[in-house]
Image (cartoon, rainbow, N blue to C red):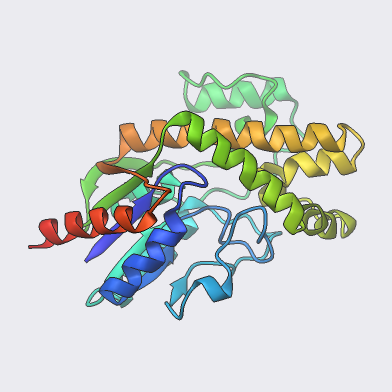
Length: 283
């Protein structure tokens, strides 16, 4: 049995994954693009050791932060685990929809080229992109996307599922979700997010994870003196809310999700509702 738990940031996926893993004697595999990285703990809301309750967890906290871990890397690693545990129950949990789609469907990548484009102007990069694909609409000033477009080899995005699985989505109303997100950011600050990010900043570590990860990129701007601390916290909350909206869009358009509205007054009700659905599907 393969069950994936998805939903926007902060909705309760981690808690449900542990409860289902205990119920079905399952292993848990991460499906969050940021939680693969070592030492990015507070800002990614990574599960704490005591919260695992003895359940085996995989693809968490194993990639050096300086490394660029790609969807292609995740697909290879996670499929190896699906093969390894094919005779056991598996819970996939995380909010990165593209990782889940690349894992479960006939989604074929080629590794990116490692070509150095630093000597080219933006205009030259744009022209090269148009030569590669005349429909390329990346803006000439978006240098990073232009380079990634040139480095990317062909990929095929098929919708054929490779496994039998169920995708469970947790949701709540927008006002409640935004309140959860805002309070979650405040809690991260209390737990030491600033110190966590400062440890990387002081080591002068510049990597894709730190420059794109919500909670990390904003505090780097604060440490650089570009924005105030209050502005950084506000931007973390705002970017987290925007990310939640993008997550919903991807899940609703790209994956066959069965949604469950979370009962935050009694989370056990949500657990029971999801378990009944799983058992009905498996029977």
